[in-house]
Structure formats: structure tokens, C-alpha cells
Image (cartoon, rainbow, N blue to C red; front, side, top):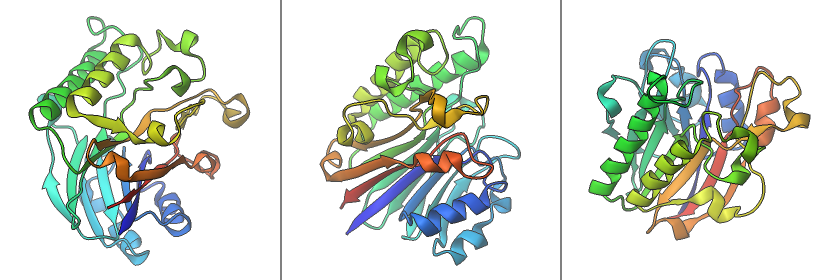
Length: 262
């Protein structure tokens, strides 16, 4: 049975519960992974989503920041989380569907504004976080697995509006893209979105600072869907729902979709 998965940095699941409901109703993914939920788990409007046909929820939350959740209309087992960098942040959750597919949902630290780990502890945290991801999946090579989330790094030149102008901007610096490439290679992960859409500019985030985000189109692809090598051939129909960035009081991220024939 094929299933469709979406990942979305929602930037407050309570504030934007209506947008989540709209996505679930109109696009109907089987599984929706959310990041930056900014809510304790018991405050997530789970009943609202259950009424829309998504009775299964696994989540880790914090008041006001971070937070990850997986909404599913398919039964899913909570596999726990990893406390990356031992910071106590709610930045990871894992679940297993009844077909055996394991889903990892990540919210990688943004890294602040200064791309220097010596001057900026937030940037050092980001690099250490991705390095721990690399080492973890190198030691436990994933099989029949999907990794999604806001990884806060746009790896390719065509994943940003201007490669040259963003080389010294956090999210596209060489040290970040190198770290992400190492994490991807160590785990044997395949970038499903770029497998399906190999060419051309592709973005999932547009800054709130730009009121004309659509016409100026200064975006970055920060949100990703990866699959283990054994599962990647089953992936298809990747897309980014750009229109969601233009919804009323939107997140600054757009949902990313992929379908898997498993």
C-alpha cells in the first residue's frame, strides 16, 4: 500500500492549528511530520486532528520553542527520541508504521546569525548536532527508514536564490553543507526530493522579512525528505506546496511531500 508523507515547520502548532487542519483536509497526507511546534505535548490540539481522521500522535514538546510531532491516520509506534548534544531540546522523534517503515522527524538548530563556531555558540551547537546525526547513523545504518524535517541547511547551489550571496549566510555556508553531506553519506540517505526533482531552483522557506516573498522569491530549501537506500527506489511524486506560504498568517516554511510504494 502506498502512503504519502509530508513534513512542515509549522512555527506554532497551536497558533496555526487551522492551517494544519486545512492541509490535512485538502492534501490528506497519510503522515504529517511537524517541527517547531512550540507547545507542550498536552497542549497540542490532538482532538482536533483526530476528528479530521488523524487519531495517532507521537510528539515531544517544550513551552514556547522547539517541539516535534508526527500526526498519522495510520497506526504508528512511538520509538522514542534522541537527546542530541544533551541539551534537553525537543528536536527529534521517531516512529514505526505497521509496514515496518521507521520515520525520524528532526528539527535541526538554526544556528544564529554569525557563521563562526568560536564566536557563536548557537552555530557551534548546530554543527555538533549534525555531526552527532552523522555518527549515529554511521553506527546504526538505517534500513527501511525515512528522515524528514527542518534541517535548516540548504545544501545545493540551486537550493538558494543566490549561491554567491549566501555563501557567508547561515544555512548555506560551506561548513554547514559539508556537515550535512557527511551526515547524508554516513547514513546512506538519499535526498528523495532531489531524486524526483533533480534540476532547477527549489525552495521551502521564504523569510517573514520580505513582504513580497512570492515576487522576490528569495527562498531556500531548508526542509528535507531523505530515505534509506533500500527504500529510496519506492519514493516518488515529491513536491513542495508553495501555496501554503501564502495562506493567511502562514508559517515561513512550506510543506514538502513524497509518496512511498511500500
